[in-house]
Amino acid sequence: MLNVYLSGEIHTDWRDQIMLAASDLSVEFTGPITDHAASDDCGVAIMGAEPNKFWHDHKGAKLNAIRIRHAISNADLVVVRFGEKYKQWNAAFDAGYAAALGKSLIVIHGDDHQHALKEVDAAALAVVQEPSQVVEILRYLLKGKLP
Image 1 (cartoon, rainbow, N blue to C red):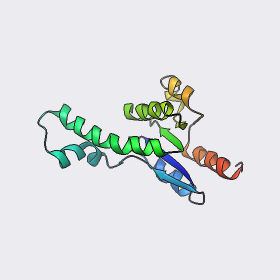
Image 2: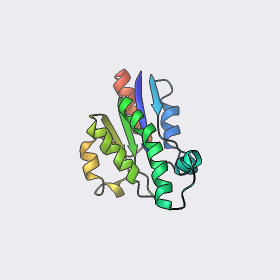
Image 3: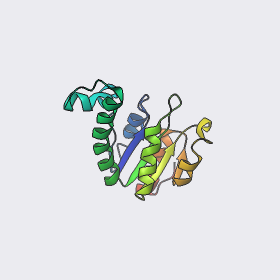
């Protein structure tokens, strides 16, 4: 069983695309909390309100880091998607953390992010543009089959 952590943008269904297309493979997928409001507000919902937005965000980020660090540490492979719309500093951080742990890293992004992500791409073992390409990589890794 291959443990794959799916990191990155949460505004499209790319995770679902990968999980559905790879349902015949021996892969266990993990990832962050993708409910944006829950992720942002988990700290104050559990540990109490903060009048200052910095501390509000700080509490949430720390709780989310527990889940993310654990999942990346346990992953065999980390996939990080950089979407079109938002600056995803958290995705870049996850990619760097995975690289620092020596995890195999696949990065997904379009040509428009090529220059901005050149260092992240240099750390990756594969850089692709589509979720379907991640599935083909998984199929090749697990079954030795080409598309």
